[in-house]
Length: 471
Image (cartoon, rainbow, N blue to C red; front, side, top):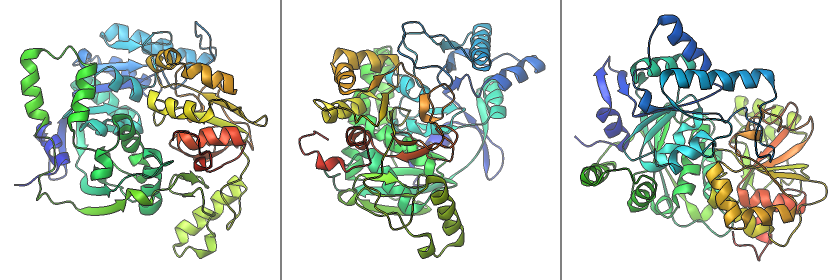
């Protein structure tokens, strides 16, 4: 019987079939952070249960950590410090590897796991964070889980899992100059809606997907959850194989042939049936910018903010009206030219070395506008060091950017990096919800290239107008 890639991954990890809709799913790797794990460890302690497989669990301090450019970081906020301290105690007590506050390998969980060779094709990876879908870039099934589920995984290395339906999104053609994977996924979300993939595992296929770098594929899969996807997948190819083997030298030679043979089976069969299919042409994708408070409220930078009255759906119309009230914008206005006071380049969506290279190419020899405070927060210590070796960091500093330490930072403003009420930010993050980057703050999602252009111009601008930039 023909199967989709999603079905193959689920079946290969099914410990038991519970009923028609639910299975007991085995997890190859479980990743934790200081924010979503405390109650889970408390539950284990209360029940007197050990961690079933410590070696298949990993912990990171990334959400609440300060990013000030100091050599030794100290978490000053008492509640945040307690979260980090408790995570360290729990990991020590259960024998779980922790990348703590000042570990050289510390970084955002969805950045460090791939760069350390921990994510491989065919795996099931769980984490108490919704953007675990990032790992679909490797042909691995990753998705976020809740705190009670974190406890279950710690105790059993399994999860009671409700099966998803199958969706295929095919993208052919090539992205034009100035457009990126971030623009592509924003285009897709704006077309199918914030609930357009709800209940589905999405597989991306097509020539445009195969042409993307591995880091760009991570960006694509990372934001698929913003369309409601329960998973995002791309069949692994030679590029994925090279990426993984370069970072996982510990795969023993006598295991390598078997691993490569298994990875070669990870694709949807030609006659596999998908419940829903969408098709897009990459050449149609322009640089995108959000205008509202949901990732699907986005238009090309050359477009105009829509009129809520023109929307036939009452729910969408009401959401748009509220979004415009919050953002202080009006239907029919140009998105280009809107002034920004902050620029944030970072997050698990766009804080990898490839993203920073793009930013540096655009801002080199230019200065951040005097009206803008701009910061770059690399995704990991490794990314930070590589950017410094390549001269990227110095280019950013010379242009007027703050060069910070790694962490989630202003993506969700759980540390002291946040917007003030009324501040408007050009951001490379994944969510633009009300108050997401700070109470009363206004977020415009865009690509690293577009955020770099906004920093220089002091307003939302079309990066393609910077003709000498390599974007």
